[in-house]
Image (cartoon, rainbow, N blue to C red; front, top):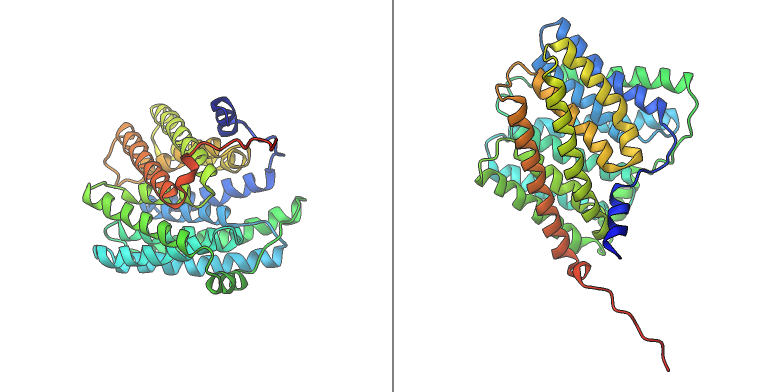
Amino acid sequence: MPLKEHLENTFKLNPAPTPIPRMVLCSLCTTLPLILGYILHQLPLAIFGSLFGFVLILNDHFGPLKQRIYHLIVTFIFLSLAFYIGAVIYGNYILVALTLFLISFILGKSKDYGVELERLLLFMALQVLTASSSPGMKEHFGGLMLYCTFAFINYIVCLTFVFLFSRHATEFMASKRKTFKKIINQKKSTRFAFIFATTTTLGFILANALHISRGYWAVGTTIIIMVPDSTQSFYKSAQRLLGTFLGVVIAVFMVRFGHDPITLILFVLVAAYFAPLGLIRNYWLGNMYIAALILFLLEISSVNHTGSFDLAVLRTQDIGLGCLLGIIGTFVNNPCIFLPSKKHKSPT
């Protein structure tokens, strides 16, 4: 495929309809925990509730209301469990590595068998990584879970109102339990699952060996990059790098205009509102809003003593490392992706 066509496939925008219900839901569920935290003077804890609300929108598949609520309850339970496990094993790199390998292996086997289980496992891995990489999570787990629970209840209430007052097409939702049984009994994806889990775990070990402050960004990027097929992995690497770079540059510029909590919460509202639209139009555009959103949340936290510019540089470096690891893992799984396709001559 010519380079020009690769570039067009990487950066072109998908002419999808604007998902207004999803955008409204995302902005409300990401911002309201921050408003509660601001009122109670607990913004450092509230950012976890905000992130949890954002994770729920990424896991919500907009099926029939009853199925959605059941799916979100299961998601809340498993993500909370993953967060608790990560908090308990904080500092024990062997246990963290083994837990990450196990979740990544099952995630690798679930590839191409439905996004419901795939996304749940993806965010379980990210929850374990986040909690196990952040000091004090076990001591503050009760307060953190109060905000995560508020984010969950708030999400259920908001989605019910959005569902009742807006009309949108429902999506098919596969059973996670049936999908899990299916992937356990088949052996076709075992090779990829092993390579995927090994690459992810090596990424975690490398991030700790290099003393990367937020190594879960690099490891999380590796997971996200390797899950698609080989060609899409390269597209996603380029799109994630571009989106992250643009997002952090824009966020740093905006923070210079105001870094008081109210202004930053307003910035979060805007970034969360446009993130679902960006993800539908193109992965790089969605990542631009997500990168800005994360930077705003880190800026909100009073325990954050790193400047916005330094955070932007660190985040871009971590994403770059994760993309590199994802490409290496993709090559190990399918070396033929780098070989030029052979043109067969027609028989004479």
